[in-house]
Image 1 (tube, rainbow over the protein chains, first blue to last red):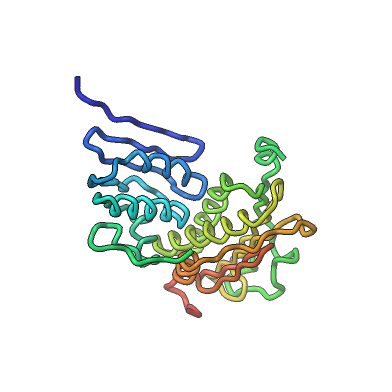
Image 2 (cartoon, rainbow over the protein chains, first blue to last red):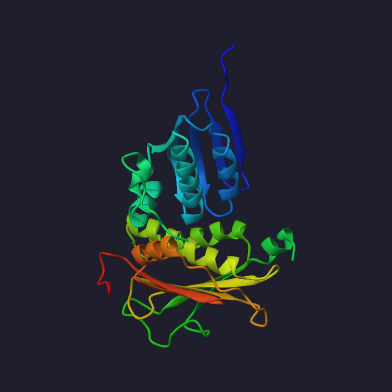
Length: 116
Length: 158
């Protein structure tokens, strides 16, 4: 039997999170402080020492709360020899990464440290 | 206040030329207008403020990029204010269009519990960097915030 996607849809939080059998994650919807905990839980399922692609083409909003979660797991995976990379960034994702000067999350080099 | 009551209490009042949030001076293209949104100080209602901000910015012919930046700015400032409020607090968000100049949008958020003792909002480096980039000017205090945004195709102070 083919492995299936594991999908979490939270309409109250306006997001969906799909875990693909190949280990990638597909995010869709508005990821703000209200959705950050769910994102944290989903990314926490990513095994260390593996390269994980997070497809953010369907993300219609991203704020610093969700970005911090992505950075947290970016650091977690890198520290254990793995990798987390955002792929297919939508305009809202690209815009926030630009103004945050964290385009490195798109997979080119280590992100700059941001205190706080 | 429970969530259901909070939603029922959420109100949007469009007023023009009156009220403490509307400056006396008019604009060349008509009188300033203010739209008020009162929300429970909970993260789940930030999306409502983003929605109103985006709609008003579109009405002012902001570009897609400007609208996106405004959504980010409103979200970051309002999230900071909400995190600083005690449980059960409410926040009034006032969107004023055309104050001082046509095409300028001013957004003010204020706690409706002035007697409460809010925490100091944690405007860390990342949030400050974002707000600097996406607004023309902003202030964040323990009990209120103000941000200004003007369409980039219009005369900008930034």
